[in-house]
Amino acid sequence: MKCLITGGAGFIGSYLCEHLLAQGHEVICVDNFITGFKKNLRHLRLNSKFHFMEFDCSKPLALREKVELIFHFASPASPPKYQQFPLETLLVNSLGTYNLVELAKQNNASFIFASTSEIYGDPQEHPQRETYWGNVNPTGERSCYDESKRLGESIVMTNVRKFGLDGRIIRIFNTYGPRMDINDGRVITNFIQEILNNKPITINGDGNQTRSFCYITDLVKGILLIGLTEDLKGEVFNLGNETEITILSLAQKVQNLTNNHGNIQYNSMPQDDPARRRPDITKIKNRLHWEPEVSLDQGLINTIEYFKTNSV
Ligand code: UDP
Image (cartoon, helix red, strand yellow):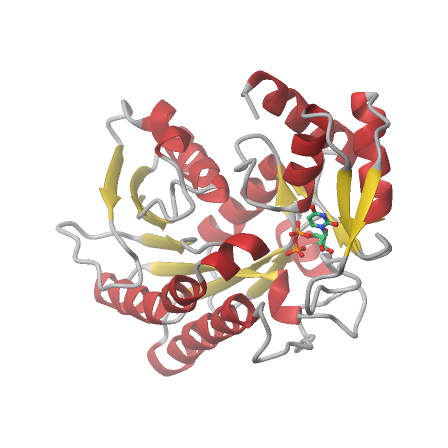
């Protein structure tokens, strides 16, 4: 199949390019490097089925050839990065989604939208099922991301209903692994960077807030299933790992795995930081027989090892 991947130079996007190529598909990868990196694609450049375009996906994209499958994964995604680029984030998830859905319609292509657990905001339902509508502050610091992803979902579903678009939505929960940007400000990369540099671990708030972390290879297998399985038009899937952990326990786990028991520094809690987050993945387990395989300990060991050998 001929696939277009926006955000293909990002953390998740680059794994997606790699796995699609490994399955024999042709990949057109588009990225403007706002938070992605050329180095994430270096190992793919010599593959004759891989094509790259540097382009800002909030603008209409003209392709010379027809594509069958579009994965819209372009967007800053860590809280510090989307707050550094709030307008770009708003635009790529709103106007960008609109434009790429138009391209999908012209090509009669399937459209896979990378949404996020952030659309649930600070959830009042726990764990979060796909049927939950969320609890989002529409004007807060996180809203450039949360609300534009919500609008992106609405654009996809409106086109599914009105024009029969084969649109599918993936709500991606916290994901980690080798090749993350060590400076993106996410919790796992921050903790590893702090420990490897012998600095105190910085915890926001009291560390009792929870997250559920999915290892990148598990996540990508789920994305491919959602993208490549037939008859999923209009379906929304949570994708993530159900193992929930407090941020304080995560810090202690990273300390234990690195045998480095330095200080913990407590900072103030950022605005609208969700108190709890865990996906209900019953739907994807039942429909597509997907579930995560890599434990948090094993995934953290792999990630720490990666950052030890790739300078931080
Ligand atoms: N966090 C933290 N220390 C850090 C970075 C993040 O305690 O150095 C917290 C953050 O406030 C949040 C959780 O860890 O409660 C996960 O944050 P992250 O930025 O990784 O992603 P989020 O799930 O909030 O989008």
